[in-house]
Length: 89
Image (tube, rainbow, N blue to C red; front, side, top):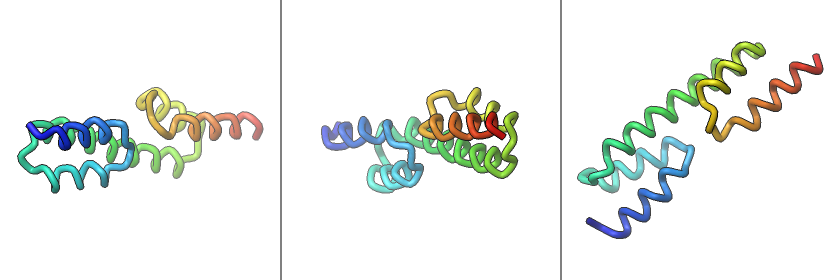
């Protein structure tokens, strides 16, 4: 196994941009990590779609549902800010 590929994979798994995952798959199409990278990429794309739906809705229920479904999201702080803003309205 390639040590550079392993380091790149470890760093990648902390990223939240699906494009970085796509790039890894293009650069390392035979990697033993491909399935894990694909799964994480799908999860991030789904999370992005759910976030966009919550923002479009703009309701407390939508933001709370997002926060429950994606508790470790990079958008967590933004979500909490949106909820706080709704409390003030």
